[in-house]
Image 1 (cartoon, one colour):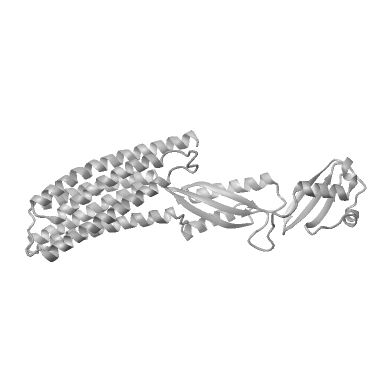
Image 2 (cartoon, one colour):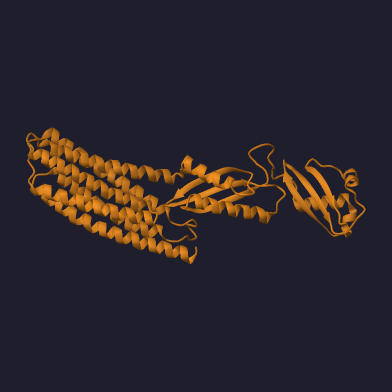
Amino acid sequence: MSASHQHRLDGEFRAASRVTLIGMLLDAVLGLLKCIVGLLFNSQALFVDGVHSFTDVASDLVVLVVMKLSRRGPDADHPYGHQRFETLGTMILGSFLIAIGGALAWDNLWRVMTTAELAIPGWPVLVIAILSILGKEWIFRYTRRVGEQIRSDLIIANAWHSRTDAFSSVVVLVGAVGAMAGFPWLDAIAAIIIAIIIAHVGWQFTWSSVRELVDTGLSDEDTQRLRSAAMATEGVRNVHDLRSRRMGSDILVDVHLVVKPEISVSEGHQVGMQVIRRMRDALPDIRDINFHIDAENDQQGTVTTPELPSRKTIRDWLHSQLPELDDARHHLRLHYLGNQVHVELFLDEPLPLASGTVEVRVDTPEWLGSLRVWQPG
C-alpha cells in the first residue's frame, strides 16, 4: 500500500475518532440527565430515552474500536485490507439496538396493560427533552458531515443513530405535554414509540451490513454507469461479466473487456487502463478494478478451450512439417479464436515457401484454423 493511501487512512481515523469522542461525551451527559430526571419526575419515556442515549455511548465505543481496525492497511492475512471490520461493527451495533429496542418496547407495553394509574411527569422533563433535541441535532449534523468527508458508512450510520435520539426526544416532549394535559398514558405510549424507533434503526444497520457481507453488488443504475463508461472507451468492442461488491466504503469491480484479436498484449492492457480511469471518474469510491482482456466474447459462439496446443507444440509441429525452418530465422504470431489456432509465420529471410504451397504440404489438424506465411521483400 502506498504511503499516501496510508496517510489518508490515518487522517480518516483521526477525524472519526474526534467526532465520535465528542458525540460519546454528549451522549453520556444527556443519558445521565434523562435517566435521573425521568425517574425523579415520573417520565418513563424520558428514562427510556436516557437508555437510548447510553446505547449511543456503547455504539460510539464500538465505532472507535472498529474504525481503528478497519483503517489498518492490507497484510498477509487480509490482502484486500480490513474494511470489512467496519461492516461487522455496523452489524453488531444494529443487532444490539434491535435487542435493546425490543426489550424496552415490551417492558413499557406490559406497564400500560398492568398499571391501573400512571404518574404525571413534572416540568423538568420538558427542559431536558428540549436540551436533548438541540444537542442531538447538532451532533447529528457534525457527525454526518465528517462521515461523508471520510466516506465511512459506519460514521454516517452513527450520525443517523444520533438523529433518532433527537426524534425520540421530540416524542418524549409530546408525550410529557400530553400527560400533563390529562392523558398520562401518552408518556408510556411515547416510551414504546421510542423503543420501536431504536429497534427499527438497528434493523436498517443490520440488514445493510448483511447485504454487504454476502457480497451484494451495486445497484442496476451504478452498474449501468460502469458499463457505459467501459463501452465508451476506444478499443472496447464489448463488455461482459461486470461484477461488483462493497468492502466498507470501497467498491471492488471485476470486468471482462472484448478487444480486437489482432492487437498486441500491451495495447490491450492500455485499453484496460483507460477503462479503469473512466470507471473511477463515474464512481469515485472504486478502490480496485480487475479487468480481463478477451479477444472474443467467450459468452457467445464457440468457446476457446484450454485443450488447444501451446506455442511450443505448434512450433514443433511446424518444424516437422517444414524442415526448411530449422535453418531459418522466424517467429510466430498465434491467434486463439473460435476454438482454433490461426498461425502467422514471419520469416526474417526469403525461403522457397509460398502460402499456397505450404497449405498443400502440411497436414491440417483439427485445431488449425489458418496458416499464413509472411516473407520479406
